[in-house]
Image 1: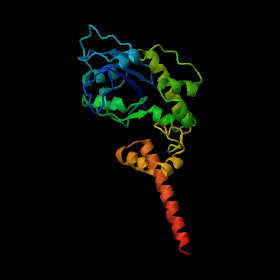
Image 2: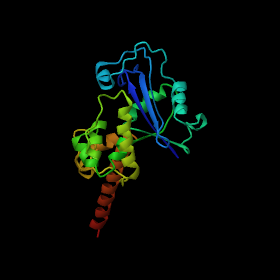
Image 3: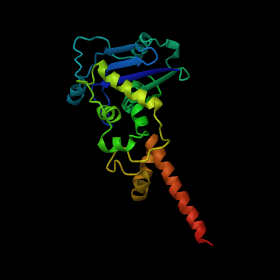
Image 4: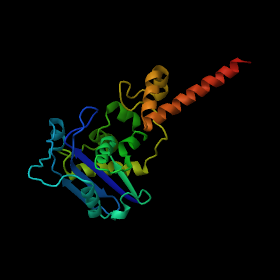
Amino acid sequence: MVNIIIDFEFTGLDNSFITDNEIIQMKAINHNTGQKSLMNFATDKPSGSGAFLKHRINNDGLSIKFSKEAFENMLIDIGVPKESIYDYKIINFYGFSVTQDLLMLRKHDIQLNIIDIREKLKLSKFGEQLAIEGSSMECAYYIVTNKIPNIENHGDLNELDLILELFDFVKTAELKEYLTVMPHGHCSGMPIADYVLKHRRQADGYRFNNDDILSESLTKYIEDIDDNMFDNDDDDDF
């Protein structure tokens, strides 16, 4: 199995109102061979203040925009055969916090399954610490490795090296099947068993409207609680 770690930078983050952001950079590393690639892209929309301060990418003078062809060529450059790019029996893609990556790639008809390293970390022994202290890439790197991240911004290959270290940890770590604490939101760090008892309506709303590890974990705890309540009701009948 070939493991490819990919990362993207954007002109900004899309939401329900803003949908015209673009991919301004792609980085990738072939974990099997060590081959790396980075490319910046021209955009019609300039980077917003927050995005620029994060990636510090100046794309003045660039003419090539991100496309499906550019995506595939970058992977070919790091040793991925073109016919294997979308074959999940051969290629595993990994990234860090990939929800926005997937949405942006779909704009270019790129349908990928990217395994989220951050989601895997939340299932590790560091899950509660990440929920309470922060799960950004820099925070996760410091929590997992106990090393200060040595990067100036997210716009060069140094960021990819940090993600690679987190990937190496995840590949050998003992991971739980479900989350045990709320990973974000107003109850970050609260045991999920307590959350579904105290905030059942919010828990139901989240799990019915999302398809991720948190929704699966909420469903698991709710089913356990409901089963226990049913069993107790049966006992009361005797």
